[in-house]
Image (cartoon, rainbow, N blue to C red; front, side):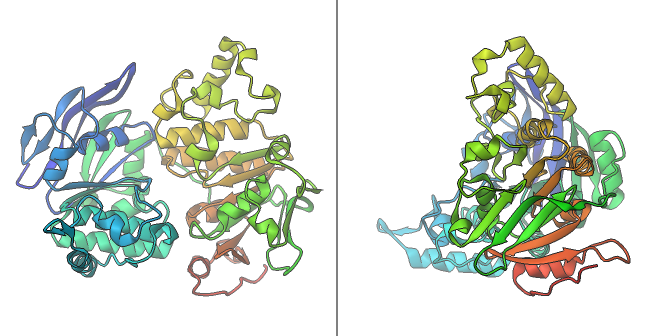
Length: 509
């Protein structure tokens, strides 16, 4: 290590019977961007939290300038200029962007807060970095991309020169991603060091100087990005070459509608999902996706109050409640797994039963423990959930493994002619899991299930969908179809529709 470097040396961490890290080592060199990649359960989150001082390692050391640091903690990390932006934002929605950015680092003169000095410092930061946000607007009203900028500005305002970013582009549009990566390059040119934890290997290759690959809790390689490739990184991560789908290979049964959304007033918010069809909903989060899911699941009736209705298997849902909807041949992958998909205090086995019709009122006591655990083990192995411990509370699993538990539960119960409502089904999961989930969805569509796929990942929609709509400010745009000449979607047109730059509609092929 040289001056300004920070990293981990031979880090191991054991939680009970689970070994999350074993001999993890990597170095974030001064003035560079470093990628940290690996499958779900590979130890990325634990390594990141140890580096930031949130978790004490079982063995090994945090290294600064080539020397081990004893009793490393968050206070020491902050004192050395290390800041962290987590995937789930820590902002107060009722406060302004200004107040969120300075929280904990407020300026004061003779005991009186100096808001003008704070403002000048923030504005200087924004000019120097390109991270512009409306400072007087409540954070709760900001788009996801600007909330992300607030988090980074908050870290920089507190004096951070080294940044840990956890899945920083997971909720951004393609345009926002490009801008964001350019901002990271600007920060690097100003001497900042950045560690990015991500599943998006294309972004790693585009912006990172080095990349560390973790597998099964251990470091398997630290590589210069100029001397490697996405294929090599993938093989190091999962031990094999992946083959991701590029398009569905079957035609839906357009005569049999599984889902119908209709607009009784304006006739503009309307579409159908046929048996065997995968219909995509693209858009930046916060543009009506939650309201659309709530309309179908009967948990949010904002769209219904505007005259928009829904039929499932030809039956009106206007008088139904959530329990009635869930009793039908329906699988739901919610956008917010921790709030709507799981009970974190319950075990993996118990969570795999939630919403199951055969369980009545979720009376787990009627099911033999051995039967419950055996069934759970089979599902966890099929979806590669790690660790494979049915009795472990779900809150102890990584986010990606929590997502795989939801998919294991929901997809296991769907029949050939059912309906799958999938909101961001691969959010936070690794490439191997993405490959598996995509094939599971296409297999079920080919068998006759209709799928409504809501995703902010255009590559996912392009790989799985027969047609795509865009939600922008609660308005539906599209449909957009594949070009019959090359069977691909027009990413520019759809990207423009996502940002409100264009209302151009694709022609039906």
